[in-house]
Image (tube, rainbow, N blue to C red; front, side, top):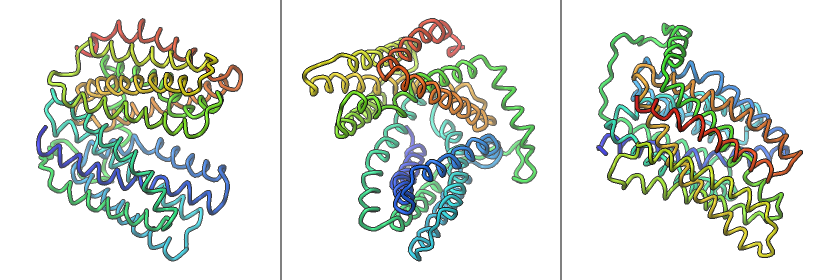
Length: 406
């Protein structure tokens, strides 16, 4: 990997770490102020809907303007927003409307940063090293997501939300300074420099039409939607429910969560140090097969009545570790293939389309999953999703793998 990329991930880690510290603070603050999970859910829903609506437009901006400058400017803006909110919190002027307005604006700025940085990364590394680049990104994201909430909870408990906002603001500004050092040549040929003169609808339409005409992009988007529906939501949304419904205490849930994170960390680290390219069919097939089977075995084990609870938990943890390890490797392959299939001038907006389709798939999965869990229980839910997913990858994903190599 080159110096440019290491500067890039250093900036990403700095701002990501500050974000992970702050992200735990606002739910705790809302609960402390209003004592209502419904209000917290309302705030989250408003932010999610806003992000979904604006993402395609921000992808167009990231495809037209200088991506490096967008990263720097959005980090500076995010830093200033955090520092202003830290001052507001210091003066005890926080209220629900102010919090929601801040979170919506911050979501807007962060989404623009994500669109620009997502599209910039492939320009900083060689094509053959994309898999390793994504592994590095996963590694630093996991490190910040593990340590940030722990530190954030402690800081909030002892010092309040103002300190979290202060730290996050400083981390954004440090990240902006770091990103200035990235050497990047912006090709402005045919691009609109004035943000007000960009033809947003035409740009969005052009990107959507290009996506529909590309078999490779449609294949990767389909795989991402299938993964989102059958695997991502069951693991991320209902993970704690699986354990609680089957009689495990809260500390088991915490340990299992750490086991999954360890699986992703070790998987990312191993890919970084693998000498050969990690993008062949064997790696693709093995990753998908093993992590789908481990999900099914998790459901089978959960349904077995064992006298020794600790032994059962160990088996479940092994399944989760294997699942996370190979899910990471499969995601690296799919994400790298997706980036290779994108023209640079449309990378951000098509990436936004993919994100939107994944969001739709996850929303449908939440609805279907909630019904299945209430009516049939977690074991039937996991096994149903697991076997349908295995059938899908065997008879839809694998037979069409050659599209990725086209």
